Amino acid sequence: MCGIVGGVGNLPVREYLIKGLKTLDYRGYDSAGLAYADHKGIHVFRTPGRVSDLDAILPHEIRTSIGIGHTRWATHGAPTEANAHPHSSMSGVFVLVHNGVIENYRHLKNKLEAEGFTFKSETDTEVIANLL
Ligand code: GLU
Image 1 (cartoon, rainbow, N blue to C red):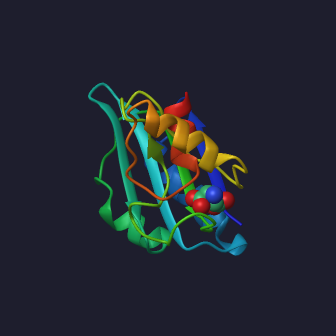
Image 2 (image 1 turned 90 degrees about the vertical axis):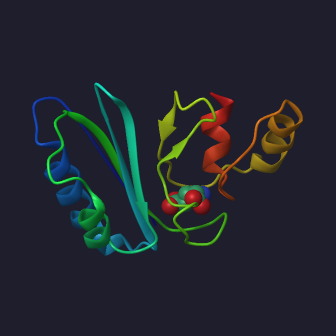
Image 3 (image 1 turned 45 degrees about the horizontal axis):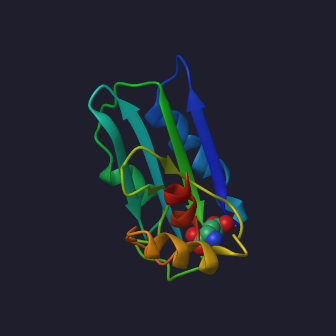
């Protein structure tokens, strides 16, 4: 079972998301990641390891107040960095995390590939980012 935490507003987003993901630790997971947005764009960090490994690869200071975090329990694709959430659309406009399974993802992926979309992961989740 994965975990999702999101924050927006006047909060220390780095600490808020890491603390939230650690709180969800009991649910079990195989990889972790987060994304935050600032004036330079959307920044994504992912690891096939633990939340503490994610914490270790984040910039020390994050000056923003919007972000999402995820702990993954793989259903589509191995627990690798490429398959860890968040996932981005090809355009980079959409970045998302997801809990569960997209039953018709193969159908959707085939359709999107026929339209020229390419994918960086084996997940069902990335299909949604590009579908948007
Ligand atoms: N189906 C998605 C994946 O394999 C989400 C799994 C989950 O709920 O963590 O990445």
